[in-house]
Length: 281
Image (cartoon, rainbow, N blue to C red; front, side, top):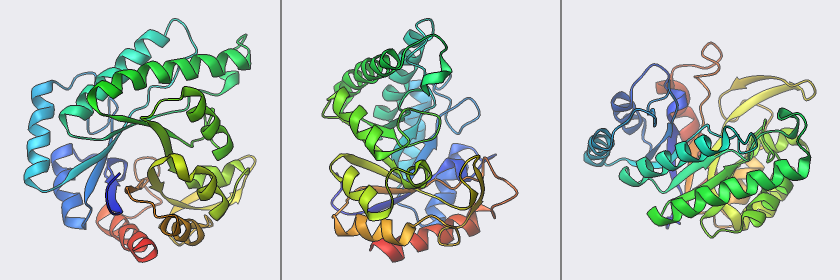
């Protein structure tokens, strides 16, 4: 890992702006790096981006003294045998792009929820997810890229309990956790410093975002700036500092999903960066 904590902005926070605009924006805000939403409507579309285009983006970022912290992919269905091969092939392309960009990590969902594939037993859901991520990680290892499995709703790995089990079952040196504590807290299995401690040995990357939770089931929440919501960030960030975490803390500013709830990134992401720095440095 890096010798110190660094901070990146997620391009989710700047919808409608292309990768070139985001490089300039995030440099101005004060981030060390960029986490990129890789999707057809993201700042990078891995299904159309050429190697030459990726090399040009890398040169531009390097000239601006900006790093890429993580590529956020959205391919996750390892269960459907008709889709599985295509999902893995597309993840491999994301890995190739990460290598060109000198980006150390690719985000991979912990599969899909068990009930998303009717007629498939949970054991098969789990096994197909493990083997799919393992195949992806074996390919990533050839490029020196790491796979971080996110704690996220809509997957098998919303809690620390479950993501640790998946990481250990995949059993690859380059597979760890993308620690997205807001979802962990919502899962209701671990809370605060305990969640950090249970995940600590596997944390590769960290997401921050805040919301005001009104109801857990069904979920009702409102996205907001860091420190203005109900997520226990002061405790979590203090514990990350205490355990000596060194790596990226990435502001997953959810402007893409909630354009009306959040101010423009020049205001909101700057606030979040200052909040994170104040609590971990």
